[in-house]
Image (cartoon, rainbow, N blue to C red; front, side, top):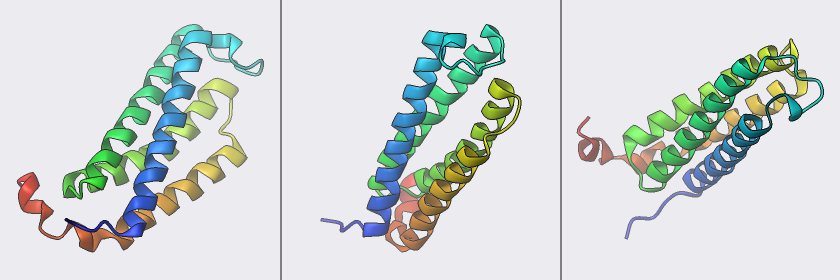
Length: 136
């Protein structure tokens, strides 16, 4: 049985939590629209597009985490890319929903992303021969 490094476990668990939070947030935004928060300035159409983006990033983060738990190299790369997209998406959503990116939210998103990506880099040796399993 293959032993999964703690850094990979921590990174993947954070990815799942992040994916769930982002996906649930997107679902709430999609359902409630402008009633989600009183400060929202975006139209219903923009809100729906942003909500779909949130749900998509959430799903991709969870899918990536599952692949990371299975030590699949391609999913590690996907997880890093989706985690970066998570930060960018947060800034974009802040701009469209509230007229400016949330300062504290962007900082928190960035810190969480740095922790996740660091964990995936620290544990990268565990992915060793998994490149051949992915066909890359």
